[in-house]
Length: 146
Image (cartoon, rainbow, N blue to C red; front, top):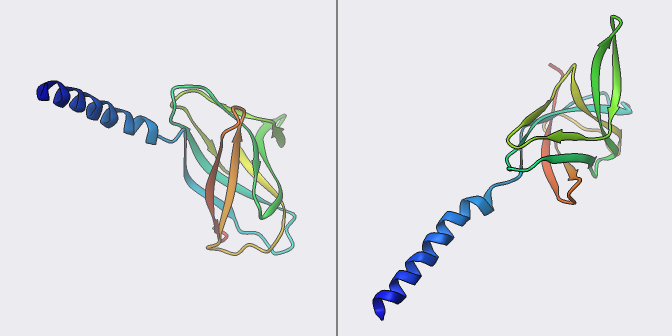
């Protein structure tokens, strides 16, 4: 009888141990999140980050927001007929275990109409909303001019 209870307890403990890493795994992982410092009167700033989809399912980012900006949008820079063009991205899709890099000269965030002047070292929260209804917030560090 005691052996059966111990076996069942051990089994339950094993299930819990195996399940914890899966439950703790974040779907989105944000690295090197930063915003380029701009003059105090700038109407928009650029944000950069690498986002990895750590899940086994497709993830669609379809909206962003920040309490320090009126709007946050995704844009992409591309070359057409020898000229750089910027276009709005309504969403970004990440396959399982895929990363997307928002960087200067490519995909980037446009943080529009800052509600206050941002200086080097400040932390700015940016929330990324998924088509699934989940949301993740990443802290972006304001960096001075390179």
